[in-house]
Image (tube, rainbow, N blue to C red):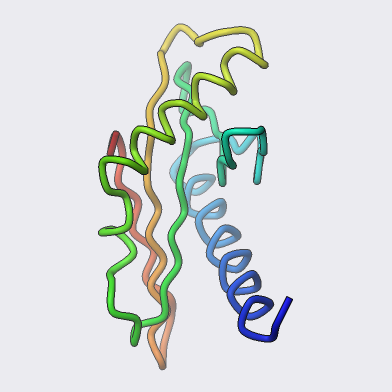
Length: 123
């Protein structure tokens, strides 16, 4: 992997750490991170009361062209729904509160604290 790829991985890990912290502060319990199957990867799986939350994390530097929240388009949302189904198949089916797909966008400005935005029910 080249230096740019390593830097992107580190940026993603940092964003996921901030996202997990934000979800925990919101009263959710993180139960898995970077869960992989043949269909892809779920960044964070959490419980919010009796609901299961599949959370996509997008991290961007402030200079990047696209805001992190613009990254979940219909095809990505469909893939996340499929991954949520695979998680449920592997982990005993849907919980009483159902399943929700959330997005956490992390924007890293050149100076100052990261901006972390959590949107519930994006797909």
